[in-house]
Amino acid sequence: MFQILVIDDDRAVQILLKRMLERQGYEVITTSNGEEGIAKALDYRPALIICDWVMPGLNGLDVCRYVKKDSNLTTTFFILLTSLDSIADRVKGLDAGADDFITKPVEQNELQARVRAGLRLHQMSHELKAQKQLLEDELAEAAEYVRSLLPNPMSKPFKIDFRFIPSQQLGGDCFDYYWLDPDYLAVYLLDTAGHGLKATLPSISVLNLLRSHALKSLNYYQPSEVLRALNDTFQMNYKNDKYFTIWYGVYNRVKRELMYASAGHPPAVLLSKNSKNNPEVKLLKTPGMPVGMFPEAKYMDNFCTIEESSALYIFSDGVYEITMPNGTVWSLDAFIRMLAESSNFAENKLEIIINYLNQLNPKDVFDDDLSILQIQFD
Image 1 (tube, rainbow, N blue to C red):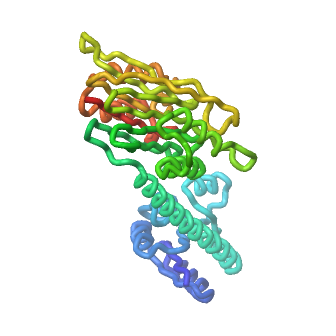
Image 2 (tube, helix red, strand yellow):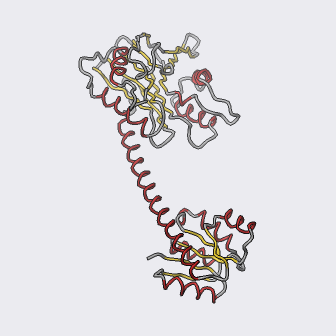
Image 3 (cartoon, rainbow, N blue to C red):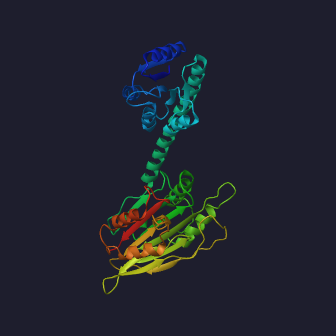
């Protein structure tokens, strides 16, 4: 049974509306002023409120504004009861959040028709809210699942830490690192085009495919071969318009040698201390189109030696494609300068980086998914 709250300082109007509505099978609650009406609304959360516009104390507009701001009353249908019928008055009522109006003196058939229409809209809003909550709960579960797939930070034989900040509950960034054998570590970070669930599914597919070594007869020690195999497996077609960029590397901890290849991805940044104890910056990138764009795409490997006390940063473009308060977009070059200049080789450098990016970003969330890996070599 639907509950209807009637708020009117005229006792006769209260009784009239209560009788009319109860004959239609509704449960009716009455009160005489705006303050009590708000309290009753919060207690009972009625499906529909009929409120007099002109009352001492809080008037109908005040009550309406309060009700419409309360998250527990978002589906409650609000009808203003008024003898004011000018267009200007109706505009004021609509601006306050009123859903409908009933003009005094109340005509029974009109009241019944407007209440029925209001309750239909309330029911629809209630069902939509329930479906929205269900979807949000499922997305939260999916986001938790994605996080559970990410690797744990590593402390030995060197330190690996990361930050993963999707722009929505689900994002298109994904990364992993694991030992191919006791001496070789594979590490990669990929960024799928787009956001949300549609971008998450391909990235999780890649993670599971690489982690399980499901691509048989593939040399996982050679980055260019891995990218070529992924490109063969994840080609765009008329059903799937998703592609992704990726940086993939294999580190030999005995030789301190890193082999890497990239596919349309931002360069990894290697910081090493030079003779003056200042950071020397190397950009690690090879030519190659994003995975999935062209079947004939070619990929190549490159090598570098990892000096002692070096730090490697692998990231998605969300760390620098940030629209700042002045409307300009930050750049990769600016991000690299910040990496080189901010508290060189500090233990908490990732926190310093994220705090800096938060200061640049004027919004509560970033426009793009943001992921960054930090590997600190002894």
